[in-house]
Image (cartoon, rainbow, N blue to C red):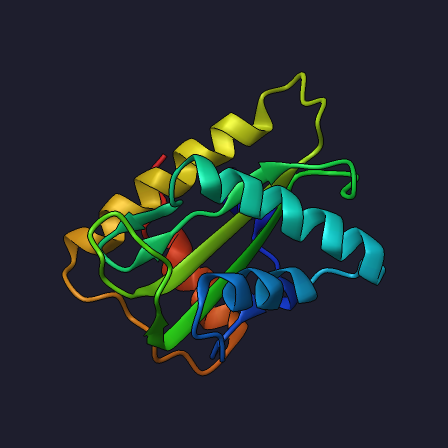
Length: 151
């Protein structure tokens, strides 16, 4: 599942964001969307954050939402070397972001399947100890994530 969603042009190697809002905007900016649609997506993601932080702890966040602004399930991965205060469940900074956006109508359940795959990969990554943040290319990030995807 993740292999088909991971795209090198949707990976941020060194995020500059320091806050939750900045991080979400930086992740959204990777998408080729007009500004008004980016704003709709930002509001949708923030609404989800009000329900509870998608910073799952141990340095990982999985901001996600359904939105009419995308035509297909979309994944953006961000790496923050210094970490972002994302109000994570454990209070620790987030270094690895998986932003997942799906269409409102998803009869094949790809959205839930992708969330499950991301959760599984996240468990595998934190099981190694420290999250790797020093990548030289987007391909290296893709390979790192896929090396933890044991479907």
